[in-house]
Length: 205
Image (cartoon, rainbow, N blue to C red; front, side):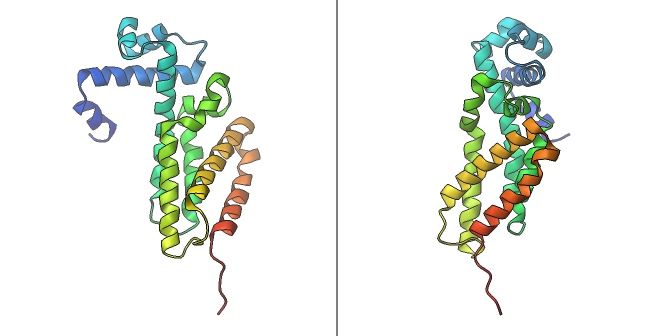
């Protein structure tokens, strides 16, 4: 036994109940959306009473936002692992994009948000807490590559790292909304632009 199962075993009963409600909310909101879902539906899916659900989340909006942050964080966590893999430039940027595309397919609520099916919270996507961690990781990776000469020393790593995350998020939204076969090929073009902007000029001889 390992991973999530071990984490659940070490949780308090209250934390386990909260997690069960959150997981049920992610599944139900991801499948049916905010408007068509009630807290009673989620509580029933989680095997608890509605009053128990309200003890952890004061209203449906708070539960939805918590579920959104949790599902998005799970997607981004997979992307973070690719940023820190020991691989040559620019492979980590490509792996980051591919990893996030694959992760979104496994996380229905995150996919629903990227598809624009929850317009009331679409503008909050950029404020998801886990995105700040991804920005920080990309910036640190770029700064490390500057130190060893793999990225131009005259570029602003913070600006580029933030831009990398913003463009990746935009590409993910395009892929979800218009389909992988239509949008994914542009990923290589985006990576080529970053490579041209970041990599030091090759010297001859």
